[in-house]
Length: 81
Image (tube, rainbow, N blue to C red):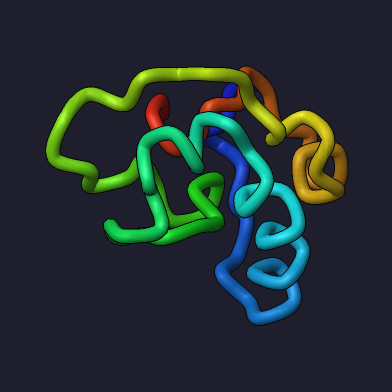
C-alpha cells in the first residue's frame, strides 16, 4: 500500500505524537527542519520546504505511533513523498 493513499490528519493530538519523534530525529536536527514549513508531521503535510536538498541521517518515522496506526511505509517523510 502506498503512502499517497493514506491520510494522516494534522490534528493537535497527531502534532504532539509527532513532536516526540521529529524533534529527536537526526535528519530533522541535521537539516534544521524546524525552521521551514511544514515544521513537523510530514506524513500529513508533505515534505519540508528547506531550501537545499535534505541530507538523510537516519529516520525516526518507523518508531512513531502514527506510522503503525496509519500503516505508513518508507519513512523520511520530510524528504520523500
